[in-house]
Length: 185
Image (cartoon, rainbow, N blue to C red; front, side, top):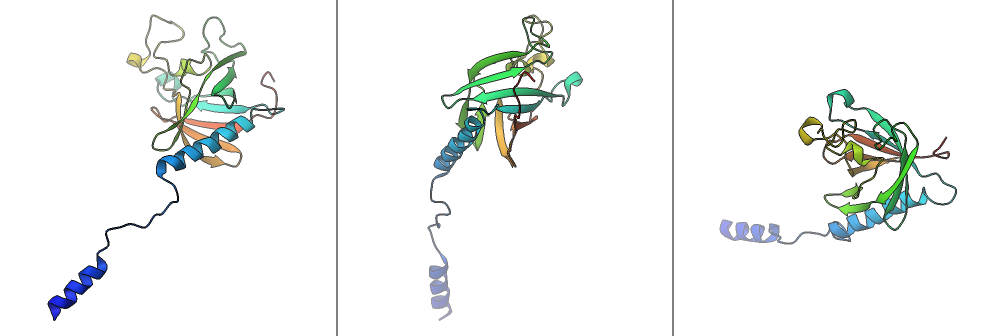
C-alpha cells in the first residue's frame, strides 16, 4: 500500500516539460529590443532634434581615472553615426577644436543589447586606441590597454529620456542625454 502511494505521488509530481514564460525566444526578444533602441537613437537624431549628448567616462589610466567627456552623436537608421567633440585628445592638430566625424555602428545581440561603434571614429576611438595620442604612433598607453575607453557599450536601462550604458571591457559609465541645442553651442 505504501509503495503504491509513493509510486502514485512520484508519478503525479514528476513533470518533464516547462511552461513557456515568454512568447518569443531570447534571441528574438533581444532583436526586437535592439530595434526599439535603434528607433529611439534615430528619432532623437532626426528633423529639428539635435541628437545626443554622450557623457562618456574613461576608467583605465592613472591620469584619466574616471574622467568624463561630452561627445555628441546623431544616429541614422542605416548604421551611420556622426559624432562631434572638441576634447584635448583629438589627433592631427584638431585637439581642442570642434570636429565632426562619421563612422558606423550596430546593435549586437550578445547577452543583451550592445551598441557597437565598429569602425574608426576620430571623436571616440582615440579613447580605445592603445596608442598615446600625444605621441602617436610611437608610444603605447598602459602596455597597449589604451585610455580605458570602450567602443562597445552594454545597455543598462532608461532614466527618463536618457539611455544608460557601460563599457563592455573597462566598465566606464556612459549616459546618452537628448541634446537641446546645436552642437556648436
